[in-house]
Length: 530
Length: 95
Image (tube, rainbow over all chains, first blue to last red; front, side, top):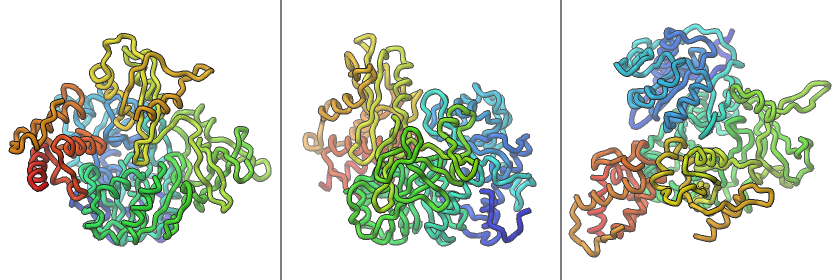
């Protein structure tokens, strides 16, 4: 039994605890509205009760399809308190992607909102297993049980429903873009999430006086920090709406007004803020920490924003949805970081090894693949035993015991000072403004269209520190129009960030001697024409 | 694309500005067949993303011969086609 003075071990216990110790403290703010810890806890417990009333059993998957707003944390903590496994879906997903995720996770319940009625109705037409939807009113167009948000408020309760669960229970399944076929579904436990959250709260000295901005969509691992690390400290999470994120001038005004103290995002968002955020007109001295991850931060942009925010410390964090943050590098205040920014050192709850193709450790200074072991690493990919046996590898430990390491697929090198530095992705995964895109999946999407005979996707720098996807295709008929025949249909298959910004029609694709598509040649051509 | 500029046509009417913005958005940022109205919320995240906004801003600068300042990248100037047109007319007369 958990004693009243023990630290929380389950994610939702953090808000119940904050609700007891500082009930009126703001937990979440969005667009001028506030949820106190007490109200968040009460609403989340109401959500949990509603889900259990709709037949939810411990371990059942509950998908959440919501735009940014105060409903998100209510849904998240409500699902967790019910004993369900949370499956947040990218709110920008096309219907096909929603269907794939619902089917692959075997979700039985869905939490959504009236603005998503059309996509829910279309997705659930293909997913009869999802029998209960919280957040919609019943209507002629629904064949599933609808429970409106009003019912959640009516069930609000100071105490969570009595559900027996432990910290090794699954907590959530996050999905990568997985634009065709099945997206990668990454399963974490309460413990793996809490381990990251506790490390982060301590490393960045989070307190209830902090305001953490939530930049990234709530289906990403960035939001794990924004929401849960804030809750661990009893701090406030300020959700940034799409409108604010599209308008850097409005964003910087909001950061000032909300006295944001901790920021976490991909570098691209900070580059926009630095270039077009009118920072000279703002007092942003409240910002203590700026965390960034996911892509290279172009040095000129980094140095400029460090000058624009002289009171902030900058922290380069490394990890993936599979591992949470597992290494970090705090930039020195003097901005004399020469060469590529290191990944830094392993977090206290992680250990890392750099190995060769045979998984044997390389000597310091040599390039190898990064392996990670630690309490923050995922349980595995949902329902993918074959992939799990490839990436979760056993390595000898003490005696006849073995330990499990995660193969990151990232090639790194250990520097003389002990810091790690990133060299390259081992495969064809690229990042576009923080989103993972598998080039082969973009190609598969193109090839699924009738006019396309051959397709190659490749990444080029977008000039602002991120990558842009481009594609080259060979088409069967000369009259094929990219604008009319390809792009509209591609938009139905691929999420926005995976869409090529430019598609070129070629007579043939360049090939390597072994017959593989030569992406380097395509990149070079693209470079030459600019 | 016809490229009328404020220099050639100094007394731009709001209606004309709005129609040029709508034409650009529908042609360059939306799927064929999708339309946008002058009072639609452009910043809901459902019409286009931050890259789309940057392309729209680049169009505004080029087509109306304006130089946008960092302080111009605010919700009040971009929320709808109608307010964007008002911003363009204000900025055009002050530059």
